[in-house]
Length: 164
Image 1: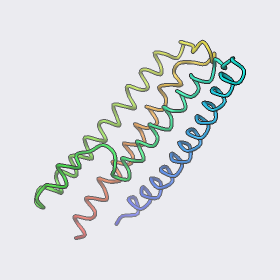
Image 2: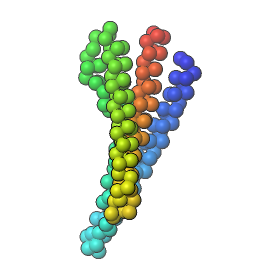
Image 3: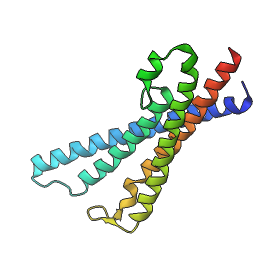
Image 4: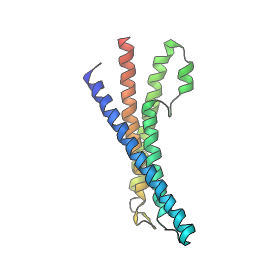
């Protein structure tokens, strides 16, 4: 296996760990915010206006980052049913096509997410006084991660085929 593939695999592993760490932190923070919101609503009859928009932003981040890791680990997106039932001569080609489709999907997520972030950069979330574009940057990040993870999977699949 080439040193490039080894380096890419190491990078991929670190990115997966970082994405899961950020996702876990965002989920814990979201749960804490929702608990605070419920407590203040029913305890003081006065819910903070910022809690729901922040929770929704955090949800976007942890869902999209975790989904990207799911692509890397092979349990999210893709044509698993087709690949699992493909005969051996077709399996290699279909696997490569599958990862190419997922990489294209990641590319579109990144590009269109950037377009949306740019378009909404001057729109302000009223209760937070921050740019609406914060809601679209996780699409860019997850799209880039999906492309990196798919490139790694394509190269590993080719390396396995040439080795064995």
